[in-house]
Image 1 (cartoon, rainbow, N blue to C red):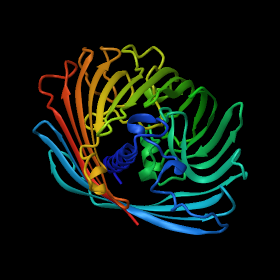
Image 2: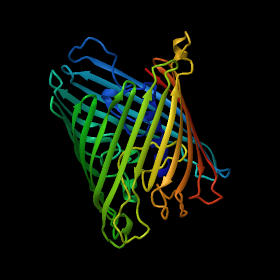
Image 3: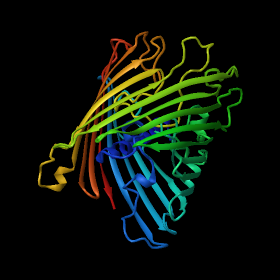
Image 4: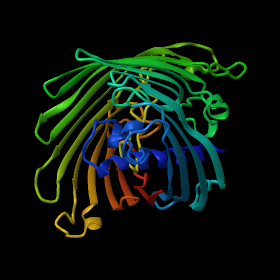
Length: 449
């Protein structure tokens, strides 16, 4: 499968999962639009609550057909269709313990294109999840092992699938999470951890180990995090491309007042890299950083209005290639706008949003569950002399541009929901005058069975 097809699939799944959390304006804050891969927090993956019994079998699934249309100016357009089917099965063991298995089938096909490579139709079948989770009766100790989703802090430095194990210890003093995983066994076409050509062709073979220590106090939670990433890829002859990194950070989240929650996280990255000098074999020292802050206020009023604010920053490389590698490189998922979709490299992003239920007063339950979200994004480079993200804004100017995102979330029934995302990006001074506006539209529905 070509890299463009893989990126389209991962983008679709990321945007759908990230937008799903907006149906319910609650829960722990995570990267971008409240992205969360936690099985225990995903209502689509939990069996129907009922009286607990050992060795009770539950099963189900959902199908998500999506249409994506991307346009850059008047000369470039691409329309694709991605249909994802997931089937899961779960068996209880004892209280708070179970075995969970989930498979997925992703079918992608190009529908229309203009001056862009139209992707060929591809069908990928993958083992999405397969793990066992065990816990003590009171839940103070929880252990899981197998193929599952892992997340560190907000997910900025790392979140995603892998094969490994996780241990959670909950006490009245501190809560501790530790995990380790390997990503080289994932289907190479759905492996999101690639940095080099060898990663994309063979699947990124990386080892991750890390964890958090957190302490709660007066409706607040403070935590420390650490992560080590070891690159085990097979390098091309005569070209080094390994990238080893370590991440250390701290975060704070909680309630400021009734209806107002926040989160903040800072990460400092260290490591060694050959990416900039793959042919000469010179090694870079990595010194980078990133930060994220979010504030959400949910009004106790008609239409359930909410104000959403987010700021994100990622350091970038200097123009002088002889200096350290200061570009923040992460293995998480950040959703910073539908049309631009920037990576957190040499960039500042400020986003202000508003959400409401337009039919809050309706006597029809299915109509009351419609949610509208609007966001404005301001993009600015940290170092004007170099590009941001991946080649964005090549001119020696700070201002990258404006972004507008509009979303509709409609939980029509308990098992049927509909969603539409629209994104607009207006280039700023860092682009040439010939750079066209970008438009992004993604629509589809989710049927749970």
